[in-house]
Length: 396
Ligand code: NAD
Image (cartoon, rainbow, N blue to C red):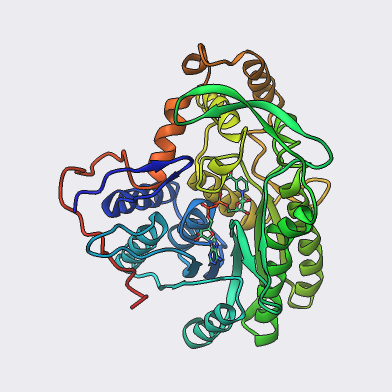
């Protein structure tokens, strides 16, 4: 089958198996080029391992630290007639590369929020690895089914208290227009916290502690974002920000629970990057396009893999995590550099549809977005037939 990109709003509904494989191989090459990561975990569970930060975490752990990895994700396999999702092909490629490198890798496709998935993964850990040294929690989801009550929670991206209006990039038409978002109402905040807060992260760690599958000294890390003031009404001070506050509350609780093992829980604040999750947030694509322009010009731009390599190499495994005053790891430090933010601020006030292509890295945004789905990668013959039914080896 010839697979082409089909863009609908902020999502691409097709994915290219060979392109995704190339994307994974490129990320592995970045980690390898930096050499082995010393003192890294050797058995790693990544919840949300198929795309974005979770995929790059799995790659950094495996190809940097030499870790055996178990990955959990929610993706659609392809069939003879229809391509699957990018995360499916990424995971297929990851496992093949891991096998070639002699690294254990096993994957589970299904709902990470469910009790069943937790039990299945814990069984696999017991069978194959005994215990886990590091749990990366990197889920981004619009909904969650409560495993105890069966209730479905829905997360929303809304400001709190007042209507928010700001510039916005329409990525399809390349027009800078304005977006107005009405404030959260009813139980929007509680619902968003229930999906993107820390409850499920705690459930994973609780279940693993109870089953005795966390090794002495085990660490766990979940990801957050803070960003600049221009995005605060929709992010840090919005419904998603409340969920991230809850995540930090869980981090403190988990820190206590892991103490008897001499373990540690972290929240890592990461850089704003193009991922399937971030492209759905209003205002953020314009901010990212301006940020990429500034950081690329300064030579400080990083993508998910450079971020995750730096997280493992320089913070989690180095003995120098450099927490901020709230105890969070900050690998958004280069993004939040005051000089970078001053430049982005200045561009933000000036940017409009006429000067967009000059002031913002729209091309970089678009190519990053397409790469998420395996399109536009060098060395891939997009005119050749590809097999959409490519499988993930450990999932029969
Ligand atoms: P992403 O959309 O690329 O990845 C989400 C992952 O979660 C995928 O592997 C997906 O399969 C998995 N997933 C979703 N629902 C699931 C379910 N029910 N069961 C199992 N797996 C499921 O997202 P991302 O941008 O990499 O976000 C990961 C984390 O990083 C989030 O907490 C996000 O807030 C945080 N973060 C993102 C950014 C950014 O700019 N993208 C910046 C800082 C922090």
